[in-house]
Structures are given as structure tokens and as C-alpha cells.
Length: 189
Image 1 (cartoon, rainbow, N blue to C red):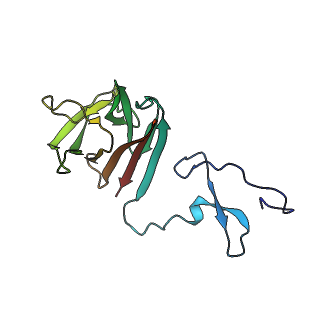
Image 2: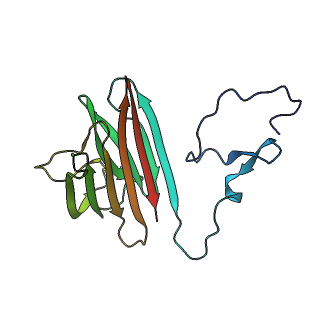
Image 3: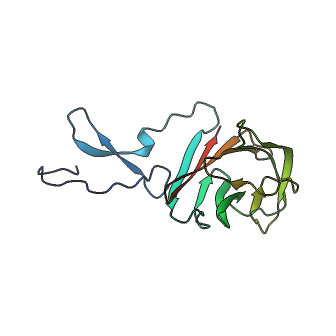
């Protein structure tokens, strides 16, 4: 138990739900007692379905640009923003470098225009070599990279070859006063 004698207080909590280094989460019972439970005890049982995963990464900056070293790992992929002047671009790569070239099938939707929809990249295959470099999104040279404007929400859809998993990744940026919030959320179905 965390609260043994009634004189200990929790002063700071950090969100670690998607951090694989933490196997426990805080839990409060109906009487207000605080304890921990193992993540494995609250994970749904697998009954022949694919493993479903939802992870996110949210952080803030004060200059309007993202932190290049902040990544979100989801299944076989890593996602991040990269600083570009006063905005951020979206990029992704494989979580592990492949032993040979891999083609990943993708499509991308960019939403920020007045009507809520600006651009959708056609479904295409993106190649990752053994170097496993980041690929910028979207993939159409005429449109350029996905510069995430204030209040913009974008979605990237991916499927890894010869697997039944499907990924939907949401990217969102919002600025309030001098603080910019960078949100990446990944769902693996």
C-alpha cells in the first residue's frame, strides 16, 4: 500500500500507461484506498483476435516547435514530429530495422482547411531499407510535408505486409498562449 499511516501524500503523478518499463498502475478502491495492480491483470484476454493496442504520446513546448527526439512506438512502427521553422512535420519508420527492404502500405488524411479537409494521399507502398530512415508524411512532393498548423488534426493509416494488423495514427497540435501541445495517438487493430 502507498498510504500506510495516513500521513503520506502523492504530490506528483506521471502518465506511464504506454511505457513498457512500468508493469503496474495505480488503482483506487471504493473506500479511497490507493494501491497498484499489474497491467497484465486488466489487459483483455486474447480469444483468437489480433492484439489491440492503443498508445499515445503528449508533450508541450514553449517555442511552437516539436521535440525531435520524442517518439511514439506502436507495434512495428515509430512516429514523431520533426521541427520545421515554427511548425512541425510528421514522420515515421519501422521500430526495428529490417534485414531486407520492406514495403508498408499507407494512406494519409490532412485536416486543417476551413472545410475540415485539405488533402488525402493515395494509398501507396513506402519502402524501408536496412538503414530504416524516417519517411516524411505526406508522400506527394507537390504537397510537401505535413506541416502541422495550430489546431490541425491528421490521420495516417498503415498496414504491415503479411500481417492482419491495421494501424490508425492521429496527430494533433494545439497552441494556447505560448504553450504548444503535441499529441500522437496510435491504434493497432
